[in-house]
Image (cartoon, rainbow, N blue to C red):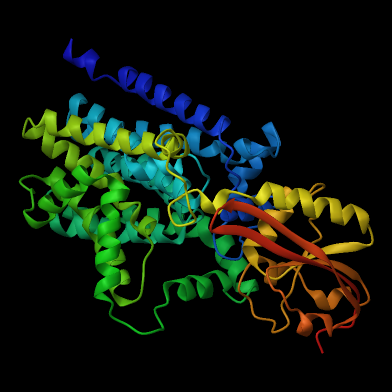
Length: 484
């Protein structure tokens, strides 16, 4: 009876229940695409081995899904609702391999309900894909160690290579491998195993096309990664480090992260299985925490930590017969997810008027309306291309303007490579052409001076809250003369 209670089929029932609920939330939501989602969708329009800030996997996956179900918002986001259940099943299989079905069941249930997964299930991001390949590589690595079969080493290399094509932080997986093998008396012998290094070489070979793409584009992705880390600016920020660590309570869940901190300060490593989980939890979290101290780190940057952390915390609580605490942690995370999913309905029911500072959905509202207004103007000026001066606005407008203005250009007089559009568009190739310029700027004298004629068509104001509106000014610019 116990085996059936904690079987994969039982977990699968809960996974599907949660996933269908999330699909319904998406279906009935009025939220627009987040700027990065629109950005990645734009990448997916052409097959490349690399894009400005990320490896290509995210764009490839969006391209596959949209080729099947179209370019609707829900279809662009749909990969998350497919991939997270697969990742959850892999986590179940890892826990079953290391421990037992009960630990496996709770590990899967914990993962599918942690706040980071609940939130990112409604968007498409690089973390969604990275967590899948991270967990798959970990499972195959464990199978390779236990069976010593070459097939699992090869599959682990392939999975790790795809992980590198998903997000560059997959490289930290290698650090965890060496940390674990150095700590494990049972498996230390694999440090001298040719299979380990063939696996690493295979992963590197799979990743090579993106490295070559970066070489052809002056390693722009790596330059961008350095820039967003701000590692070259003023160092040492205790405030940002504590802010990052505080945010992890929201990422993993308040109860679960508290238990994880307890385990980090009082290591529970009585056997090799826990050494393995610590090895894939501590290095990643430590590296990103150090990053937050040196400069800054966003809360989601530590996401792969929570693959092994999920297993570690679940295994510890099951071992200690703390089922009630484990169920409480899951329940708290589900309540947090419901509060997030139905935030607008809850605040409306309570009579709370939202402001720009109290609405977490602020960044995904108003773009469709802006796109509709710009669409009307572009139809009135069929000789003009869309021109923008910031990445987020341009990504949103390329998606929400109909028909999609894939020939849009970004204003970049200094020639600096700060986003994908700086890399792929060039105003200097459009001498003599006309543009509809959509900008937040009230004064565009420096822009207008580069055109034969410039006139303001009007402004678009989309009121979201009493204290905030999206305001854009729209100009018709004729005869581009060049930046100089």
